[in-house]
Amino acid sequence: MGLALNKSAIALSIGGIALLAACSGEPLLSHPEAKDYSLDRAAAEEEGVVLGTTWEALSYPVCMYPWSDPDRDGWGWEFNRSCIVNAPQQAPTFPYCQSAASDPDGDGWGWENYRSCIVNRSGSTSGGSSGSGSSGGSTGGWSGGSSSTTCQNPEGTHSVMAALAVAAANELGRWQPVQDFAIGRMGPHEALVLSSTGKARCGSCTNIQALLDLQKEEVTNKVYLPGNVLLSPAALRSRMVAKYRDQQGCERQPSNGGTTNCPAEQHQLIFQRSEAGGCDTNYYFVAKKSDGTSLQYPQQLKNKLLWVDRENPYVQFQSVGEVVSIDPTYGLNDGGSTSTGSCNTACVKMTTTNVSNQCCSCNGKTKSFKRTTWNPNTYLCQ
Image (cartoon, rainbow, N blue to C red):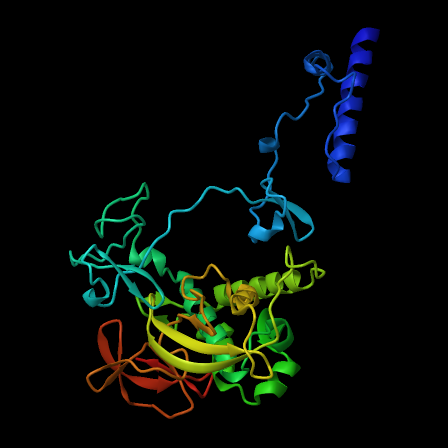
């Protein structure tokens, strides 16, 4: 029994050395007495002590940033915890091209809106995969996706949050969500609201306020988006508050050269144009420093989009030179143009112009716009 206890003590002391080495961040050095631990492990198990064997026995989140692992050992440090950077690679998906002219060499792949797209020659609505060759099926080892999957809009939240990023760029002229927004209340519920700084910066903020008002309970079962998606104000509140807190947490990280915080230059955003995009309508903005000179790292502006979910397919942030873009649903921002004959193609229209009783088309049905009771600048096609 004394021998077993002694071996258990040896096993536990070795575990203590490993723990101290892991916590200190120093490499585990070889020890002259630590050549073979198999006997110590067996003794420990006899006494009912179970020793961990590999890191797979633990659970760690996937790192959000590749630079969180400066020594490239597969492990990073973010938000005061360890994370894994060698997560399995996900199969990419691509939208269908808007025009076959985007594929001049006829290989089934085109280039539109600063990204690759698949030429749909079959008429099918199923999307494609990465690789080269045909526009359908599986190529290059990846399985095919679908356009409906790529542009999923769960409970309407994706497109509304992307539209809020566009409205912030238009009316606030920047993406500084921690300064311009706050967590407040709508009735008994937590919700995202404009901060006093945000209100002072843009005045009426009509488009932003119209989008924020979609969090109100009276919106329940009333707002439909393309694809017959019914907007849930409860889901919208929950996601926007959670993502805003993610943004806060990221920006509270100490400046450390960009490994775990959210670096982005002070900037201004100037609307350039809107056009058909991958999921709906792309809005393009010229990004410059506050003094009008060029940004050094415009691609870092993506770090200011945690609050609208950077993985949101309707965000689809792109940075080409000094131009950045977002891809929300048409009608949620006062700009762009989409029409079917004399009718406006939008299920929801947010505008300071009175469009009551004007013709509109939503999900294939022709109706007319009606002003909502919860916001004077929001109209529903009904």
